[in-house]
Length: 176
Image 1 (spheres, rainbow, N blue to C red):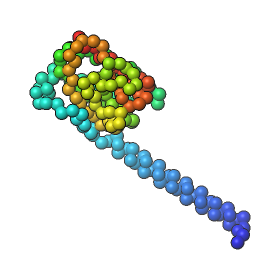
Image 2 (image 1 turned 30 degrees about the horizontal axis):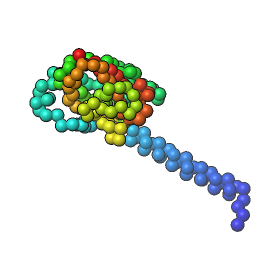
Image 3 (image 1 turned 90 degrees about the vertical axis):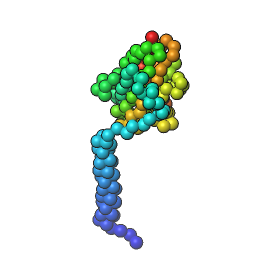
Image 4 (image 1 turned 180 degrees about the vertical axis):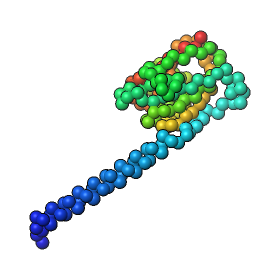
């Protein structure tokens, strides 16, 4: 059966309208879903059981925020509005118990880990990590850990998600 040109144009127009409608409906659902993410309170994730004694003895808490500065630059900060790349230097005393609270304020998954070097694939010191490369904190999640350095020196903190250190997501820790 041969269709007239007018019928062919009509069928193509109908097909185009169906595809366009599907795209618009998908975009509306996506925008609706994304707007709900920003309004949710942070999800707390405890990476390691901190004993009550450690929490009571912790001399101070350090809240660190992580996120993206641009599509090609990520970083850390001591407030969500002051994220830098590299992140700020953290100075701590040897033997001091510190509660690190990491809040992912970015749109991508991120982690926090204390390491001996600021490079991709560096291993966490004494399991001092919040999230992992295989189970990072999602956008708007937070986690905490209590840490204590037993030796003075220069250490680093990094995001262990592959590629994020290269994009600037690291900072220095000085234990004195």
